[in-house]
Length: 349
Image (tube, rainbow, N blue to C red):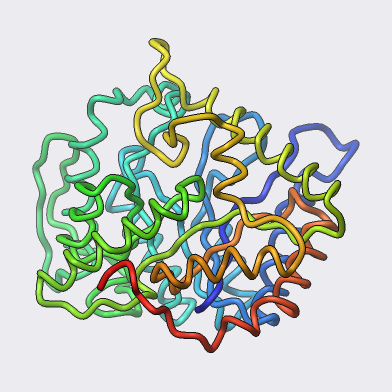
């Protein structure tokens, strides 16, 4: 198994009374230490208009992080394509990939939060069309050695060639979030790596990996467990009371996310917040919280399900010293027991 990070930074709004960039700098230092502790990569979210100070310019933050690190892979989880000019995005991503020596993991998605589509004045009904057209353009921008023009439904470009070229050939590794069997097969069909959300139950994770592996091998490719990133909230607690407090914080954060994702008619369409059922049960079942033995037991269950790459979410700027302490304990007391273990892939046999 290998381990990476998943998460965000936060910058407070305000005047000169406090340093609004402090949370972003804390996040950078957290990731720099993660590299030193042996983490493989980091995936950073993109969100807008939350009022919570979440990361909105993911590639900018990762470029700064790339300059402070040497081996840590730099991932987006995810860039929401319907909101971005695909040519400008291709240029920015290629620049980061080039400067970092090919360390970009380019995670993409369609988006799901109602407040963001409303804020950009982009009809949610257009998300699929914008997504498909953007993928086509991104891949062409990265691979075309000749000038080209594009006249599509949402974008038009005339006589362009994207510079600079990315470091990785033919293009940066593309990751795509998915949850349903149909969408997972679509990720495999495209030849992309798969990102699974943090609220999926362990049983659902095992099923998703089996579906993805079957689709990858049916296409004549070799399945590698590192092609699937499985996000899990984690917290190494000092006591049962601290564990319960952490679970309560996570549940409150999820309810806040659900409010941002909810459409006026009450529906929540897609995204990692779509897990249905009792919110508290989902929270407890999906998180890996507790002492090192409890966490190791949950990780072993994931390993038996074929999980090879776990993205832990629980520190960064929001966790402060508590989150930093938890990550250090995870790296020193838990990671060594799994770092040399190969996934058994029982669920996919």
